[in-house]
Image (cartoon, rainbow, N blue to C red; front, side, top):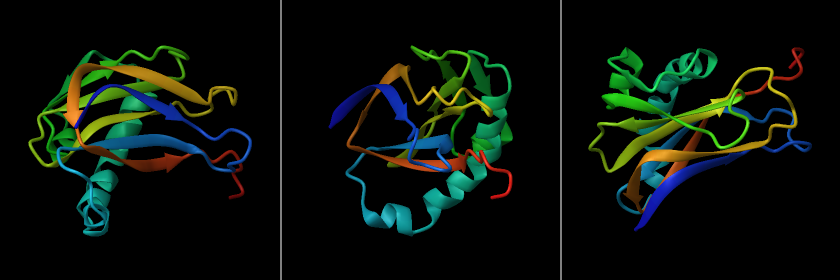
Length: 149
């Protein structure tokens, strides 16, 4: 078991044609298994979270967010905005609260659309540290720098 105190996201810069833009980070209260991904539950949760994540990333941040239908669908009751240590106007992250599942949504984070290509990473301190035994990261949306793709 480890205690998570921050989230660090690094984007590939020169080698990826479509780097990730929006992410859902799942915490694991037990060691993660292949079946956690293959059974479809996390994929369904990630799909349901995409619209919520997009809304939170593309609109001004608020400290506490609660009562949003998309968040309730994730099994969470509240989200708290996290402060990024760099690129504060380009990246956003929220810690999610309220899930009692073994594999639970821990955070949603991402980069704004049309960000400076030099912004390739960020670190956000968690509002409340969490003890976990593993993580699973879902890429919810990718940047599409080429409209023809």
